[in-house]
Image 1 (cartoon, one colour):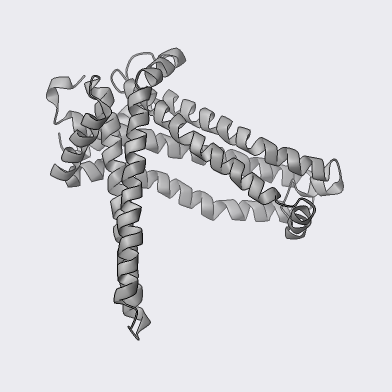
Image 2: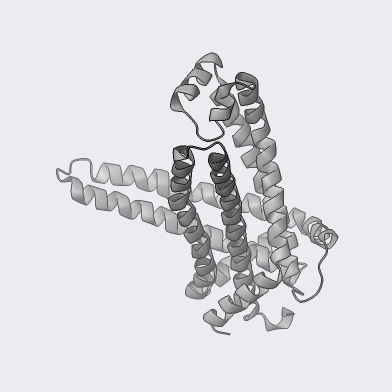
Length: 302
């Protein structure tokens, strides 16, 4: 199977398994709402039912934010800690959900209940968590070797250069090398997840080593199957970043009481649609990787 056909098959599988996308979106929305609830409660207790609470519905005045931080010492550090902890919680949660999504690829044409999803998520949870730990260790090594080691080396190398332009290009090259290395780690961990579910009995370490060999031996194929769907998710994020501020400006410029609320609702709905699309492209990337990997393992294809 060519890589183009594998990607097309991956998109077809993702289209048939879009119910898994809803699970990813709703679980992560639940985590986000849980993390945001202390922040919402803090702002609500400070504003109550004042006119400022109505103004916050259509904008976020800088003067009010300064006043809020002045009257609530250390509140931003507290909220930052809450967001950090919930961010850490989302890592193992999404690692376990990956097992439920990938198991769906075995029989995408058959009915798949929510109970089946979470049973499969639990079935592969231990191995997915171990892969998460292996991935975090790999990310740490990359940052340690490239970001710290290579950064110190380039600083030492260019310390006495008088022209800033070659210094910029050297530092840019080091930064791009870091991004490539991080992306490669992501590719390897993705294929390791695929192999855990596809082989079913494979352990986390064995799956990691096997996916590393596959990614190195068929680098172009492995990276392309991951990159093309992932670029779709990045494109959606770019659209939102460009359109979101403009929608907020329109809401702030509206003169009636109803129009700002409508624009605010459109911003919220648009943001959730973008998030759903990004999760769909994430599932499409896994499905493309599944197809690319399965074409080299005909004995376990479904």
